[in-house]
Length: 354
Ligand SMILES: [Zn+2]
Image (cartoon, rainbow, N blue to C red; front, side, top):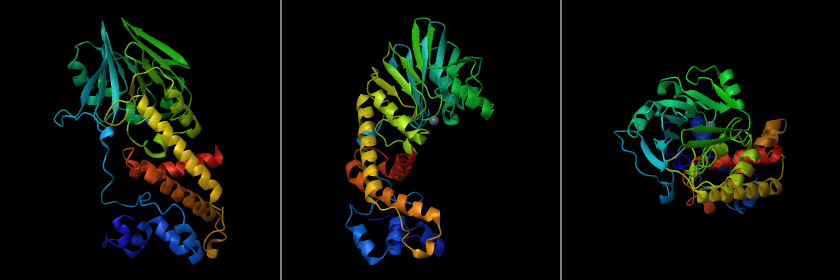
């Protein structure tokens, strides 16, 4: 079953738009010979998840396991105590933390979506000033609200984050005042945070921030508790590195994981779910890359179009990947239908070249 756009439900689109928006698999089948079409239909099945860019009437329901505590809409955020003096702040899209010590407060990340309310969140617990700000990584959606915190906190980040921020020259992301290469220990009063850099995965400079007394690890854009990762494995710049980092997380002694996104904090069960997803998609794509023939293009009129050969091949691989993953994962992980095509394309690209 395909989204209603394929049955001609959107009449205001012009003929070209309708053809463009009609699902890739229908289009591909129309281009194939009858024999090829029969062969395709004998495979695991054409995915019933709308390809990238195709509108859907309704996305899949969110499983209960992915729902976090409700946000009071009049406040627009909630805080959650993670341990002695340590708090999560979230608006259900983003997550940050703050840690209270004897004479001040350490803030970790300032997502612009609610950074203007971090002061209010802190004030609900303490009237101490913000003395330190830690950047998890350079991305603007996690630290672009830094300027709204006020004061002149010491800003701590990894060397690569400092390099990327110098290049960005963004006044909303002030340069760090303290940087480090591999690890950094922040001891403030009786509180402790251990910062470490596991190497590239999501983005160069993306660090782990661990509060050992509270057994809480903040590691952003790697595991999205209960949810399929944001597109292309959380926009991982190094997919094999990202896969290894998820695996390594399972051996970390944390009990609470602040992933930087979605409704709730995570646990080792969420990491294990992500590892199972990663293993499954890697196997599905690996098999499809072998079983699908590379070329020729279905229409001989495209014979001189080199990119068409790649687009046709990787399209078939991605369709097989989505068809394989759908029955196993669509009810197991929230938002499966939103980004599974992205993940399958990212996986085929990585397995072919990394
Ligand atoms: Zn990021």
